[in-house]
Length: 404
Ligand code: SAH
Image 1 (tube, protein in one colour):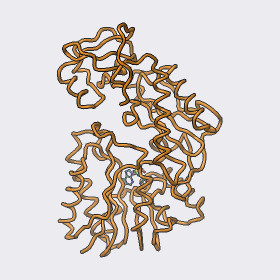
Image 2 (tube, helix red, strand yellow):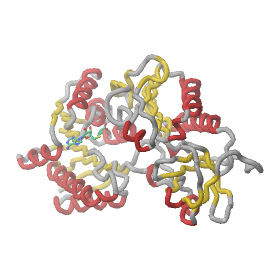
Image 3 (cartoon, protein in one colour):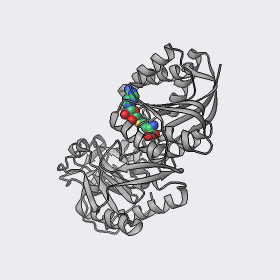
Image 4 (cartoon, protein in one colour):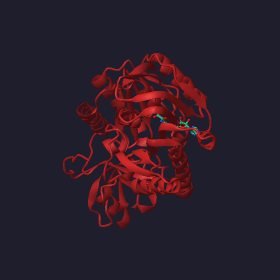
């Protein structure tokens, strides 16, 4: 987190004192402190800027306070902050500049990734000329902060529309008044984007996340390098992998099939195929059942993608999640022809990189297959992993060559 000038003598912001454990967490450069680690805090207004001290009264920096979340404070600076909207505007500009250096071959990418851009509680995705904003904390929801975010995005990126996607449950948890999703600025809420030369429809008010899985964008192109023969994109959503396997110049697929349980997702996938002048096969099904039935019927593929939703939403789900990943990977491996390619993903933060590798290795053992790692990947570079904040590194994408 960039340093700010040293604190001056007097401050209007309320102060909080942390337990030794809370202070240690901050020294480890994780920006969150849980309510149970706050030992002194009186009547702090929701969303306030607070000055944070260790148990001996030493000043540790400035944080955003939430009166309702278990994550009571999220650090925003290791120094003092005089003007939060100005600081947020500066960080948004820095986040945009960071992407300018890194992002290639796309007009759809994440511009602000919350803690990883030192803007806890703010997500901004760019879909060509439409921006999609998500505001997840009390402090980011304050009117002067919202205004600063919008003004900076307009000045820096000149979008035709800025959409806000509201997750009602998160607003409820943060005890923020309900508000609908809607256009915050401009007139445009839908557009067409281009990732790696493949075009996709975007509608700011439809679909999952902010509309697409932008974190997979670089993985689409990487996987296309190996994709060949008959390909099955399980959990295909709006066709990200499937369309790349059909259109990317490196891909050598003879037939591509996408499977998802969501009809609206498949309708969009079909529209995307048409937009690119393609006709692909889309199957509405439970991918677990479909893989089991296809495996039993001896169906074979040369390339299989597994990109299921997060199985472990909490730590408690971990064992069940690992069994789910193993089962899926086992079925896919059995269906691959020799020399086949397996692209297997996990977006469960609670399943660590080592655990995910182990689960795939266990599946390989049971399937009697040898797997060679072609690539061991994560989210696209516009979703940076902040090293001391493990929560920012949730996506695994492994690409294997599978032999008997
Ligand atoms: N690969 C996609 C993202 C997949 S997200 C991309 O890159 O865009 C996970 C998808 O799994 C969602 O589209 C969801 O609708 C679908 N899904 C969830 N449970 C499913 C199930 N049991 N069978 C098939 N699809 C499922």
